[in-house]
Amino acid sequence: MIGDSFAYAKDAIVGKWMQWVLLVIATILLCLPLLGYSLKVLRGENPAPEVTDWGTLFIDGIKYVIVAFIWAIPFLIVFFVTIGAGIVALTNNPLSIVGAIGGMLFGFIVLAIIGILTMIFSNIGIIRFARTGSIGEAFNFKEISATIAKIGWVPYIIALVVLIVVMLVIEIILSVIGMIPVLGLIIEIIFIAPLTIFEARYLSQVYDSAGTA
Image (cartoon, rainbow, N blue to C red):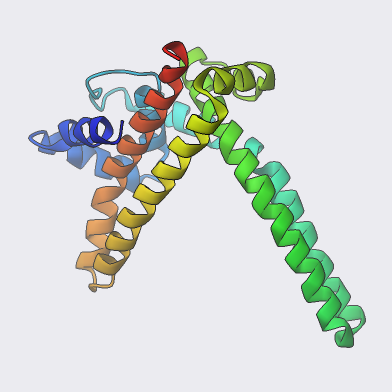
């Protein structure tokens, strides 16, 4: 799946320089059209679709952000409660710094757990949204759990870990390149689209593996 996803992303831009330019423009426009384009990839379109119908791309991108934000609400609530409680504790009693740090550390552990669970379920939820066109289906926990069960919980989690490792390595390389004044920033912006396409294609294949499990 990694090899296929790289080939898919490469075919989307290499030799199609105008399309790459359009994807860079989509990135600069708050990434909304790029997110809309990634939904096409998540629908399983193969080969990579053309960058057309900007109005639809913008609208789909906004929907994508809404779905992602709703999924992030539990994480955000715990985050602000944790930070807020720590600040209040220090404000009321500056000497209770140990207790405040302990409380915040516990909160960050809870945050990590919520973040992992959110990632596990939200990826499938977003693909369900992409394929059904229904925002409600992005939160259909019964069907999301059923899909993960068909993939296999262990294979699915391993697939996510592999994706995280690959993306982390690429991000580190781009971060090093990004240290080059001006040119580094330009290169990072140019490669956001191919990375987004790669990730979407990979997750799409993971989702489709439920049908062949």
